[in-house]
Image (cartoon, rainbow, N blue to C red; front, side):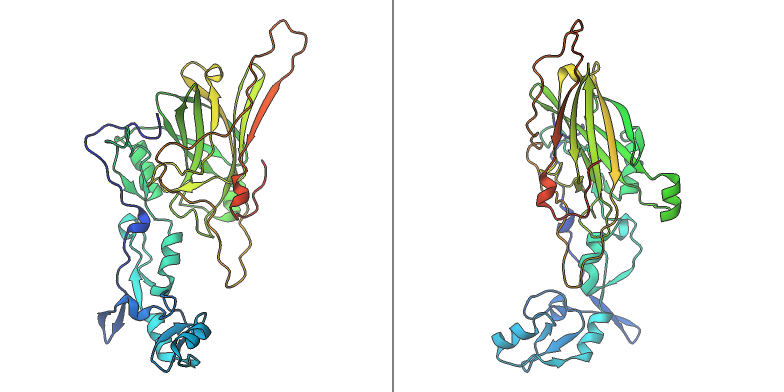
Amino acid sequence: MGLGGGGGEGVLAVVPMEAIPMAEPQIVAGGKIVGLRADLLDCHNCRLPLKPPIFKCDAEHLVCSSCRGLHGEACGGRAAVHSALADIFAAAATVPCGYERYGCDAGGVVYHEAADHRRACQHAPCCCPDRAGAAGIGGCGFVGSRQDLLDHISGPDHSRPIIVVRYGQPWNLSLPLSRRWHILVGEEDKAVAAAAGADRHRNLFLVSLGERGATTAVSLVCVRADGTAPSAPQFACKLAVESDGCRLTLESPLVCSSSLSGGLPAEVKCLPVPKDFLSGDSVPLSIHIEKLPAPPAPPLGLGIAPACTSPVAATPPPCPAATIPPSRPSSGSSDNVAVKTVITDQSYKKRKSANPRKL
């Protein structure tokens, strides 16, 4: 059983957040709002939004500073003339964020900054973890900001308890298998929070319990749509279960982020928990979430590779191989040796992330 399991009828179609179209840019002239075609404000060469300084060739093509030389070779005209008028238009053209109904009050965003704003907007919507239902049929169609999602999950629609955990400390939880997903809210130490300032956009984490043959697959993701933005906080985590001196651990130096629009990200690693590690019908899970320090600002002109993307996972993510001891030491044995199996998520090495560290 994977993520979901809700009731309802019919097939739920969810539009990916990145598929929400951006509105046409507009400027205010003479007290009136004038709409503009987006292609008029895009570079003739790379087709990306023009950002000052903007240059114009002899053929009246507008190009960005990066394409200035390349366009001159392709067009045959010189692109060495700086267009101050084009700079004024590009700086004045704005578009709405697109997430206003989810709480964004940024107003008009400069057109050439709109893509970055939407990627980092803390009001970008997330989907309810129960949206998939069984085999994608039925389920909950709620979509909203993280705070609205938190209210939705704890409200009458689901009446789920919200588990508050503090960063940098291990927390021992007992998660019933009757509920295949659970929501955690990360909390700063009071002294750290006071120094950094109150964060009204709290971080949500989804713990999913899925069936994998004879084991229960436990995974954790950070629920946020802006997880690939340079300013988004990053986390490391350690999940562990223990029984009769045997401990299984999954260490993730970088937790994946997802809006859950396509279910669980395919990159998510999981901890396979054998049945004899369960406590009745619950998973006795130890969880340790560490908030990583903010990365240094990148050099100008260099982009930041996303820490983790969230493509649609047709099936729940596979579990890494684990060496589970075939038997436990007998109670009468004189050798009371604790067996520890550690599963380390190494996929972060393929992501260019900021300062991941082992817990």
